[in-house]
Length: 95
Image (cartoon, rainbow, N blue to C red; front, side):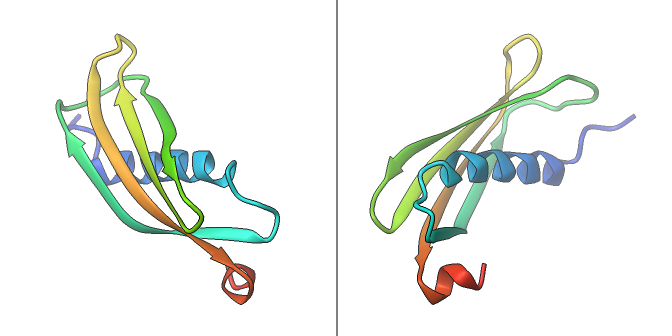
């Protein structure tokens, strides 16, 4: 079996960061991801992974988030970062 595809790790990290960011939104707000980066530190074949996402900075219109991806031994597998834009009014309704 080969390594776990990096795109899957990126997708799950994006979802974790999105869940962290949605907790900062008001009822009439939504958001979209503007940028997403991930750095890989070691390969993964089979492991239970942990995705710890947190909002590092939240302003009125943007947010910066990070997500640490670790294995069951606490070894860092990857680190992701994201910038989100808050949507309001008609923009939020379309989401």
